[in-house]
Image 1: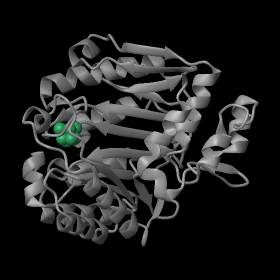
Image 2 (image 1 turned 90 degrees about the horizontal axis):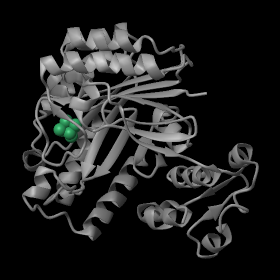
Image 3 (image 1 turned 120 degrees about the vertical axis):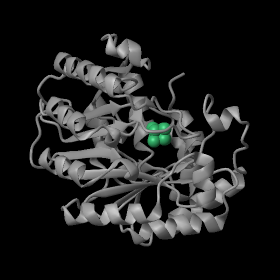
Image 4 (image 1 turned 180 degrees about the vertical axis):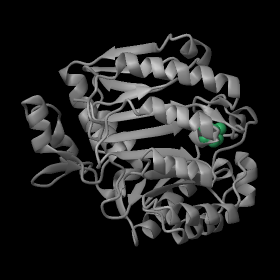
Length: 362
Ligand code: SF4
C-alpha cells in the first residue's frame, strides 16, 4: 500500500546559480496549464490509499498566487489523509505572506520547509538568492503565531569561497530560529548550472569535510543527527523522507517527479511542454528482488540507525547476511552490527558513498 506522495511544482521567481532541479520562471499562463495536467495525472494514477505524508516541493511552490495555491490544494484534496498525515510545503520567504499561510492552515498543511541556504551577503550574491534576514525572522514568528510547529530550514555549506566564519554565522542564525528540523547540503557544481558555465571552482574537499564536521558537532548539541545530512528534534524526523530511506513505495506527481510503485521506479518527463500535453512517463525500471534488496541497503544505510535485520527478513524472506558479503565490510570496520541493525559508523558517514557502492548490483 502506498503511503507517501510527492508533488513537484517547478515555478520560481528567479533562478539560482547552482540550481540543477527541474524549474522554470513563474508564468501565470503556464501555471494554469500545469495544474490541469497535474490534476489529470493524479486522477489517472492515485488508487485512493490514505497518505501518511504529502510533500509539495519544487521549484518554489509558494510563488503560486493565492488563487493558484487554492486550486492546487483542491486538486490535492483527492488524496486521502488522516489526522496524523504530515503535510509539507516548500516555501521561500520573499513569496510568502499572511494570506498564503492562512490558506495553508485551511488546507491542513502542518509542516513548512524553507530554503534559507545562507545569510552571508557574499554567499547569497554568488548563489543569486535574495532572502533577507529580517524578513526571515518576521515570517517565522508569524508562522509560529498561526500554529505552525513543525518547520524545516535548509542550510547550504561548502559554497565556493565560503569561510568557516561564514558558516558559523549561518549556523548561529539558523539555530536561533529554533526550527524543529534542519537539512544541510554541500554546494555541488552541477553541469548546466550558472556556476558550472561560469567555471566557478568548488571548495577544497578537506574544507568541505571540516565544514560537515562542524555542522554535525554544533547541531548535535540540540538535535538528533538521524540521517547523513539531516537533524531533527525528538519526534520531528521527516516522515516523508524516512519513507524514501526505508525504501517504501511512494507516488510522485508533476514534471520530473519520480515514483516507486508496483515494484517499479518511474521518473516523469523533465519537459514541461510534454508534461502539459499529458506525456508523463519518461523512464521506467522494473525491479526484481535483488534490485529491491540493494535499494533497501543503499537507502537505509543513510540513516544513523541503519537497516533493520527484522524488516529486511520480513520483506525478502532471507537474511541480510545471506544476501550480501556483509562479513568483509564488518571485518574492514566499514559496517557495524547491533542486535537489530547494520549501520555505518557516524564518523564514516561522510564517506558513505564509498561503502554504499558495495551494495550496488553488478
Ligand atoms: S534552488 Fe530552488 S529557488 Fe533556486 S532556482 Fe532552484 S528550485 Fe528555484
